[in-house]
Amino acid sequence: MNSWHTEFGPFEGVWLNTAHQGALPRAAVAAAHEALSWKIAPSRLADDSFERVPGRLRQAISRLLNVPADEVILGNSTSYGLHVIANGIRWNPGDEVMVVDGDFPATVYPWLRLRERGVTVRLIRPRGAVIEADDVAANLTPATRLFCTTWVNSFTGHAADLDAVGEVCRARGVLFIVNATQALGARPIDAAGAPIDAIVGCGHKWLCGPYATGLCWIRPELRDSLDCHQAYWVTMQTGLRLSDMRRYELRDDLGAAAFDVFAAANFNNFMPWTAAIESLLDKGIEAVAAHDQALVTRLIEGLDGDKYTLVSPRGGPARSTLAILSHRDAERNPAIRDRLAADGVIIALREGNLRIAPHLYNTPDDIDRALAALNAA
Image (tube, rainbow, N blue to C red; front, side, top):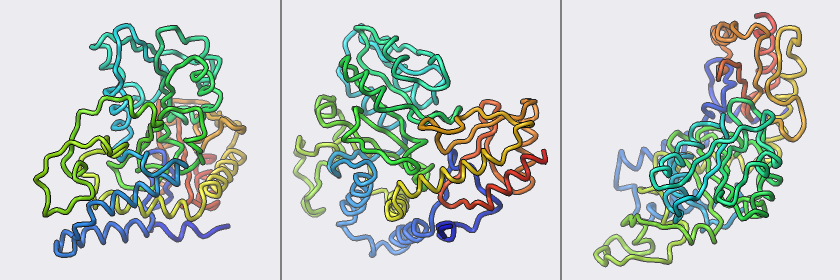
């Protein structure tokens, strides 16, 4: 067994709710302390930090997604990237956006405002537990311009086949946008090589960063077609000295950085988030994924099948690190969640089901402790 858990904590009990909040590694805590020290004694805050801090984060995200660093957009949430795309596309009346009925709200809301601009937003319901390529193909129309879905569903734990869905969209000339929040940090991805037009995600779950952190990658040909109405002064003056600021020149050479959230230096959040991503990358996302999957396997195999039914996949490529289950008497699920919490085992209750989401800081002993509490309930 690896010793990754020693790089985190101390925890209060057993935290098995990464799908809600990931824990900061100690390297990220140290980076947060450094960022705070710059404000305690502002003389420590060097001018070049305003470019160095977002630049280092951009490099880390580029390695995570396998895309060039200058194609990374820094945000403060998953919603930020989705709004960049929704508000930047030049829509025509009659265009259609397709989303999944039952998806996480963040994946749906940014498109609903487009109805005010004459765009049809249609919710489709998959025939099974997760959207599949056949579902998408059956629902596309000549008016469909964009399809957006999550990679891993927060409520069912099922992972979509991005390659299969993306190939259907690409063949029909439909943009394919992916909310990867519940997967990034727990599953590897080659964004540049996948049939995907954009990926968005947040940093506070499987990427083990602070809240109010987010990322976005948009394939350059789509990004360059977007309307960008913002002109943040620090971004516009990238490369200039702070003593040479009154030039007021709009630049068109900024690429993805032109879409960054304002105040992209964001020391208190972006420095610890960078350290957290770098820590994951040093271990290898594939190795982290293998560790997490071993914990999920241990949980599923140890579950009392007479008491519980599994909502998420038992195995195969659709299985994620979100294990969703229910007591056979579903009305007991809230009490079971509370019972586990009283025993120091923290899981989530979502849409009436129990959700268990282990990550690299968890150990087999954590899973065994959760199983003992679940099976005794």
